[in-house]
Length: 167
Image (cartoon, rainbow, N blue to C red; front, side, top):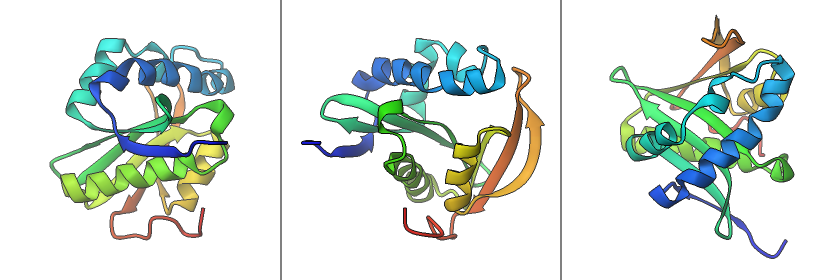
């Protein structure tokens, strides 16, 4: 590959690509659960635009193409919430998810004073669970999303090492 992938803060001009990428990436999750009404698939373009404007959103770009993204927000109690981490299917298993996760954690800790990070994923999403465990996240609970999918809640202290082993 002649170009390298760069990670940067999302800009307004990235919104439509983030929206299309999210729809593509979460198809495999929907298939895994037999539920095509999961939130990332039914989210509107305007809602993604609002998140990019209000939250901490990072993108991975290969040239001008958005090939990965992640969202972060923070609560008043110091919890940094990370969500909608996705990487284009053709670029998975090359460390982009780890890089995006680290970018979100760093941005939430440095820019938003997060003292811990929290995220969720589907209980059957083994690839996601592997990534999050490797990054130091531990199970703190279970819940059912509004779409009926069983989710696991994971958390880690902001002071914890970014990754238990090199990615």
